[in-house]
Image (cartoon, rainbow, N blue to C red; front, side, top):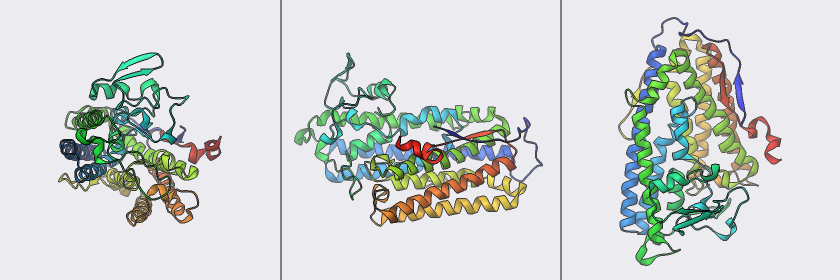
Length: 419
């Protein structure tokens, strides 16, 4: 993946600027406080999901399956707003793949439709089906999978150094709750029956092991989120890492997160690529058709760290010193421009969200021949690219060190996507 680089004058070790109402130290403290609140909310929402999963497994009814799905969707909201912390914060980036890796080769986990195929030249684990097989034979090696627990799932995650071997995190849980979405670019999400978890009235076999997998994956998500919530608590490793960068390094971290998520990750890899290919497999929450909300919450997360505010649905509201105030003091015109760009992006994603809530899922919007839906997604991509240009100008105004934003071939070299 390419990087979008911004060549700038190097800053001095200390932030060489007059004193403002919002000092860099205050901004970084508030940035950390917002992270702490968001990860605490993510953990709290995941525990609600855990309780719903436990209820489902004890009484596998359609009503309880729906409740678990609803809890999963609710749990995604605070988590997706944390993604702006991933880029620039090594503690987060090194950990993130455990909880939010995608896309995944679902045949590694459970049964799949015949159209999925039985093997892949690139992935020996493509269809080993952990749920169905207590012993896995892969490349001449036998793996004991008789007990499905968090340790087994962690050992298989990205097995063979293949990123699509996702066995942990939100999307493994999503697949288990919904099953494959076999509707392509037509209406409908995954439609797994609750009886897939009912050992007494089992459908599709191995219901006891499927329940073990769902329980193990959900419990592991809790422990992973506990780790990150602790990392952003006072004296946590993520706060220490940020403080060690100094004021200029800390501000550069905030802008790295904003620019990389805006450009390469969200506009490029998560949106433009799928739009170019018209491929429903290139949507982030592909089993549940919740992609519009994941994208929307990424945009909200970018705004959070710029404006220094977080509106929690779980009682952890934060408002404090912000990068927006610092930019306003340095260059009021740029501050106005940045706000206008962020507002325009939010409006574009609100339009996409409204379209999904009216009945057209994201995988339908990017479908071939859906000119109107394609245009809504493209408008959102364009807004992200446009706001990234203003983020670049903020970096220059603040005279920070050279920053490399994440890039994407779909934006930087579109022809290569089809090679």
